Length: 125
Length: 109
Image 1: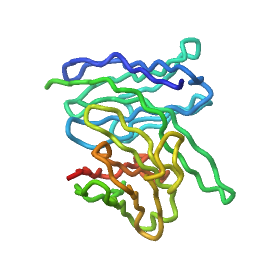
Image 2: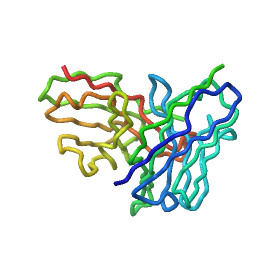
Image 3: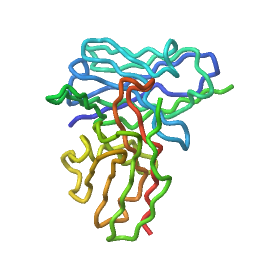
Image 4: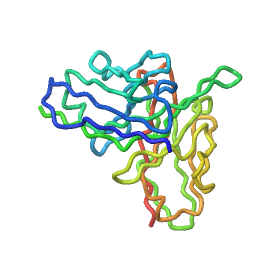
């Protein structure tokens, strides 16, 4: 069964750091694209980052320069290192596998499946 | 970045059909994906590539996409379909490569 389990969330002061983990089972993290998506309390979904199978990464402008996504292939685990945290980073953080393909015309399609259960990050100001 | 606009809420009686729209200019040129999120749970993919269903998702869930509007249709609505629903596209021109809709709360009367 394909499964993702996040951990590492908690309460941190503004300006502090936190590292989230996402342990995968049923598939190989390094062979897939993986993402972090967050959801502020009572709000919608916001994409945070993606790490490609080759190891390169992309980030939303709102976290660029502060967050770093990485993986440990030996542990089949994804990470999100969050530095210089702000009150607006308070959210439930989900990891998700990214599925994707290019069609015959070269258009790119990409979506998330499955998702983990999430880990809550609270930044106090 | 741009916004995928969804109605905040849709109410539907059991057994009827719920339609949830997701709009932005020329969304028909993109692949649209839909997620269901029940209270206290993680999102679950219910439709991908405009109209395909993952295994395990009932045929009652269907999607379409044309012009400026994509639509998720839930036929023969059940009480268990009550949830928030989000559309999503990928767009490299956005500051968020992955753009989510504003979300729609479906209430089963």
